[in-house]
Image (tube, rainbow, N blue to C red):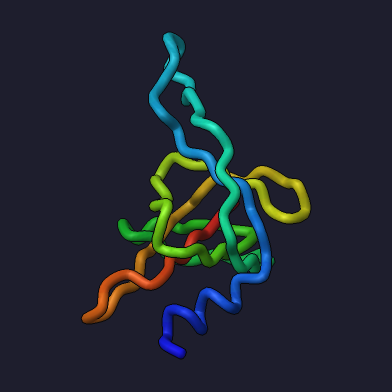
Length: 106
C-alpha cells in the first residue's frame, strides 16, 4: 500500500467545508454550499508562527485529502459541530505531488 492510501486510511473523521464564493454588497463573504470531506481532526489549543512571522492561535489541526483545495477564506464544521475559520493551510508535497492538506483552524 502506498503512502497516500495509508495516509487516507488515517482520516477517520468527517467534516463539512465551505469556501467563500465572493462578497456581498456589504463586503461580507458570500459562502458556497457545504461539502462533506473525509478528514483527521486533532484538537490542540496552541499557537504557531505564520508565513509573515505573524502569531497564529489555533484550536485544531485538520488533515484533509489534496482535493478539494482549501482556500484562505474557508470555514470547516468539525465533528463536535463547531464551525471554525481557517487560520492557515499547507499542502505538503514530494516528487509525486500533493498528498494531503494540513489546515489550522481557530
